Image 1 (tube, rainbow, N blue to C red):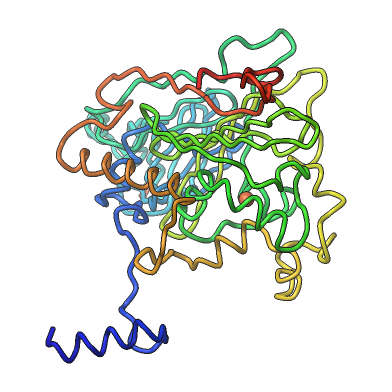
Image 2 (tube, protein in one colour):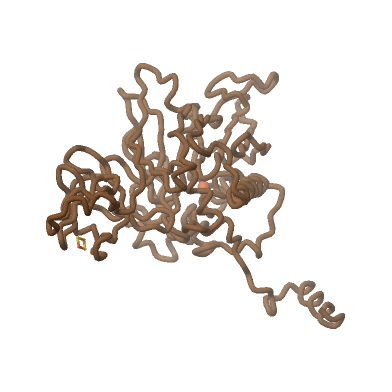
Amino acid sequence: MSVSEGVKNFERDKQGRAYGRPVATSDEELVRVGPGTQGGELLRRYWQPFALSGDATSQPKRVRILSEDLVLFRDGAGQVGLLYPRCMHRGTDLIYGKVEQQGIRCCYHGWLFGAEGHCLEIPTEKNETLRDNIRQPWYPVVEEFGLLFTYMGPPDREPQFPTFSIAEDLGPNERITAYRSESGPNGPHPKIAARSDYNWWQMYDNWMDPFHVCVLHFSINGPQFSPNLGILPEVKFEQTGDGVISIQKRQLPDGPVQQRISQVIMPNMNCTAGVTDEDLGRAGISWTLPLDDTNYVLFGLARINKENPPSGSAIPMLEDHWGPAHGKPFSEWSLQDHQQWQTDYVAQKGQGDISLHSEEHLMAGDKGTALSRRLFRKLAESVAKGEDPVGAGANKARRVEILAGNSLLDPETGECIAGYASRV
Ligand code: FES
Ligand SMILES: [Fe+2]
């Protein structure tokens, strides 16, 4: 760059005009999820939930996971299959196949494939040994807690299915429930179906972003959660062995300190506590699962009381406060509706289909986001170098521990007086 160009740039920066700004870019290591991408290869080293148990039936379904299109089915024997959709014979889509007692039969020439891809029958060939070495590309599936998980990484690096602290020491009245939400926690409304049609990191950043709660969910257009969450918290971010936590403390007007701990666990899990004053429990766990670079779905597990399960909306407070567009399907909200009742959805979709990280200006309040991204990048680089990332690797056992939850602390001693006291 010549001196005169440098002066010109300085002038432009000083005036802050939009003219001549640099071409904006995204952090490719974060946002790309397809096979062979750095982030995609990291995500593939872990068991990922991709459907509810009930999604696997005798009617084949299309599923998209990490930019790969697959066909899901459950055969007559109860085996769940997750296969590459193009039939290995001549490429017909197995979505048109017929599910049988053992596997799925391609509609074109009737090749029968088992849940793990084995070719079990070629009805048009007399030589039965022909099929022995043939296998339709497949991925393994584990069914647990009402969710279907798959491992899409290299077979020789497949870890054991992890254990989760959420499933330990269940009370006699407690059970685990699984859910899928096709949106963020506060937008679109839990009862309004809509796709989360932007890059998964825009959601994943949000789990470590406690400050937006006071603005987006309170000051910008009125409260969306319990009033106490509108108090600006004191926040500490800390790195854990396999993720990041934020410890948020709010001095409540009536004495105690409310402590809210949120957590992200690499590579794409999070634990976020409830948003009502009554909820003093431990957080559940959820996965931000990228379907591809510009779509994601959340899958989650929560502990519920068997006798008194929550009904209706996951965020009951919103029922009465759903703003100007109350009652309309989210897809019918006008621009004006969105301008009067902003949600996580518009805030995150507003960052674009894939955010432009080179234009960001991160501040101290974004430390949790920065730490999560840094850890993810570091792990992705380690995979690219041939190493195993944290909690993964051949036959590796992993325990996923939830540290997040809500509690009340004594303002004098800092001791937990009610709620979930994790070891933090
Ligand atoms: S294309 Fe599937 S059996 Fe021929
Ligand atoms: Fe939010």
